[in-house]
Length: 78
Ligand SMILES: [Zn+2]
Image 1 (cartoon, helix red, strand yellow):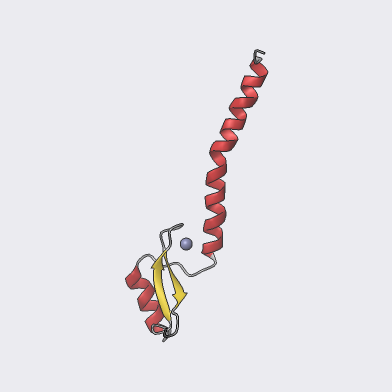
Image 2 (image 1 turned 180 degrees about the vertical axis):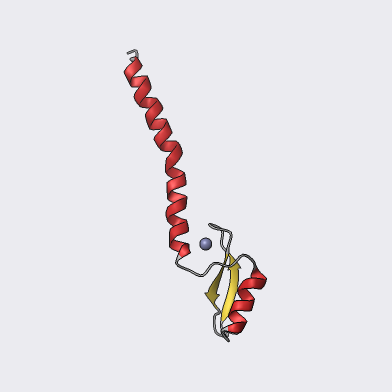
């Protein structure tokens, strides 16, 4: 069964949709981590934690999604 030109056009449109989908997913994830404080560097994040007196309670980590630095709550003891 041969594909018509219309099918080819639809296939091309679907391919375009597929190509934009991962980008939309990334944006969605970035939006969820946008709710957290984002800092340009570990030093900046630690400085904020220090100013808030939270340095002993907060840990900083580089986000794998937005590559900004976020705080995470430091786990108590062991
Ligand atoms: Zn993030």
